[in-house]
Amino acid sequence: MSVLCTYLPNLLLNLTYQARPALVGQPLAILDNAERLLALSEAAVMAGVNLAMTPARAQLTCPEIAFQEANLPAFGQTQQALLETLTGWELPTEEASWGLAYVDLHLVSRQREDVQALAGELGGRLRRTLGAELTPCLGWDSGKFTARAAAMRTLPGRMKLIDAAQEIPFLQPLPITLLPLPPKELRWLDRLGIRTLGQFGALPTAQVQTALGKAGAAAQQWALGHDARPVVNTVTQRFSPIGIPFGQPLHQLDPVVTALMATLQPYLASFAVSCRGLQRLDLELCFGDAERILSLTFVEPTAQEGRVRNHLANQLQTLIWPEQLTKVTITNLQAAELPPPTQLRLFEEAPAAVDSSTEWLAGLRQRYGAVLLRGAITDPTHPLAHRRAALQPVP
Figure 1 (cartoon, helix red, strand yellow):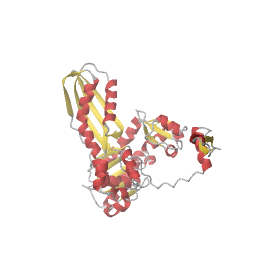
Figure 2 (cartoon, rainbow, N blue to C red; figure 1 turned 180 degrees about the vertical axis):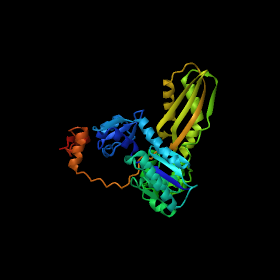
Figure 3 (cartoon, rainbow, N blue to C red; figure 1 turned 60 degrees about the vertical axis):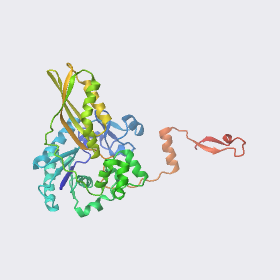
Figure 4 (cartoon, rainbow, N blue to C red; figure 1 turned 90 degrees about the horizontal axis):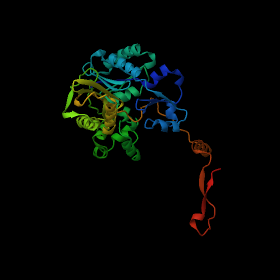
């Protein structure tokens, strides 16, 4: 294959800064419509905030953090402009996430020299369309995973083209967190001392599949530079509608949600195996002669049945039912790659300086209060064991 990846670094943050320049440099968290953390500024990350936190937890960790509601219409317009520019070649184009998309170039060229000319042309068109503030990074390889890593490993306005001979040396030192594996599985790998793609790729394949399942086995192949996933044309292809008729009209929510989840479950299971998740779901609901349209968009793709069920139930509850529901049709079902736990940085982080004991205690007092206690031997010869030691304030 021949895959070109287009990446707009920190797209959501940059669009927010354009609307509110005063937020530049401050600890900032962008919230989606369900009040989940969607994006974080560098200052917020340095303060210890991560995307798995709730807003309340993030504020406890960093009291100075500012919360900004995601401007989804503005984000969507920029994303659409990006996709329309990419589809100008009339080649298969796959939307992966905010500011990230793939173009299949295998029908045009698989040679580095030809791809370099095409990438330069595309970069110029994107800068003219999106503006200098949203300059893209471009990466190219024979597979999607390495192409994405290459795009995230270069500067805005530059391209990184990876030949077959460069794949393994390029991937080996990259962090394991670049793979879209669940946190539980990443913790298991960390306990084994597996922290780079090269270390992960060196593990026995049978052990990886036993411990991490089919998704882990697929991720290991990506770490080795083997990614046979085709570029799925999610931008222009049409979805074949799926009708879900009911034996009798329904007026209760639970049977409707159960029927929908029974239809969606095979798709979610298939997505999970390939490290993808549900991103958009469009429904057409028939209430006798009346019809309603319902669109569910997941800001971050998910393959978790519980999250899909809850979102579906919440949206159906807010919908006005004129009468009993007779039929539901899934008119669009779109999947996208699961996001990695942490985004790849261009430069390796410098090792953090080790705080002195005085600085460490000062930080604890600032967070938890002025009084800290430690154990101390007060009477080593006392006949009762629990009287030989006591808690004393830390000076």
